[in-house]
Length: 498
Image (tube, rainbow, N blue to C red; front, side, top):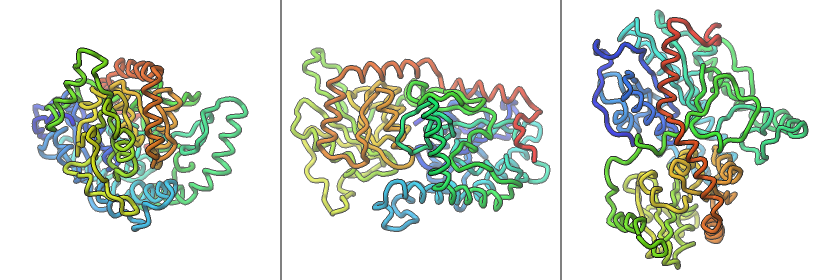
């Protein structure tokens, strides 16, 4: 988490006269957290930042942008999603967890992304009006995380309040693999490799037209319906997940490094890789983790004789699918009889305990092996500095933490973008894809063993780490905003014009 910054009063006449920056983000932790790091870095670089975000993340957002008037702007009504509460009581009812991951994704997109769109847009309108009232001459730059669909009405003809001008420019920040249509790739979620050959492109086009367009038809129709409800003058006019939520913006900054992403010949104009918010001095923990076993981990890393050093396997469940029976407990059991291995298990929520969870058949966690260390919540960057293998369920943030720290990975992910991330881990050579969200003990043991035995994984991820080290994400965002600010008072996006 970024360190706290002083409160900022957006009405302060002595504050630097740059435009305001309005940050908006999809409400789940994996989307909000990278944006809070970006917002904190912008605040440190002299920008006046207002963050429109979920109340469940108010403390983290205020730690990034301050708690002065107008710095944190709460989402309201259906837009104010609490991710932890959502997955504890999903809208599909108690059978949600038993559904196939592809069915769960459709439920989540409807409930989290498209359903709240009109309420999100109402919050955006009010936030723009408030910033305009604070200083009508100053202008606003919009910094939008790609899956906050509540900004789309702005680009499709929805009116702003009387007298409130549109933003001077807008910048998209992508915190997942890019969901932008390409002739070289199948639709997102289809387990086929990139292929820019004539045959591959023909295959991809068939998958788009004959499969995804049909499957996505309800989502495409729902998006257009929600845009109409929000006051938009026209529909998007393309299949859902083709990339309209990216390409409406002046610039698209993709968090990550080129070596992790599939190559394609048709990136949209204004697309560029921005590096990582993970790793580096901007995200190092502000204090030493307070666990009784932490000194043991540090001492193990500092062992003078490498032969005396134990292998450290870090495993985390993420912040969405948090049942430790899916991945954490299989990893603990895989190395329970290995005195030369230390397993560090991160549960993902403050004050969480293994005893809080049971498997679907009522199985308890059982005895914690003597070589396992349990953390309820722990900075990934802090612990990965001491890790040999990083086992996770393929969240995009977890992947980037591994790249930033140069730690090869074993991924067990499905649902949302996790399958895409896991396939890219294998494709890029930085780890193993277990091809399951609930691997067996044997699968985890074999995957970790493969990574430990083959130095090519470590060599490759260090190459990606060097790519990351060469890109300062926060400088990239800052410089792009400066470019947009210098274009004032004109409006760059032709799509503002109805």
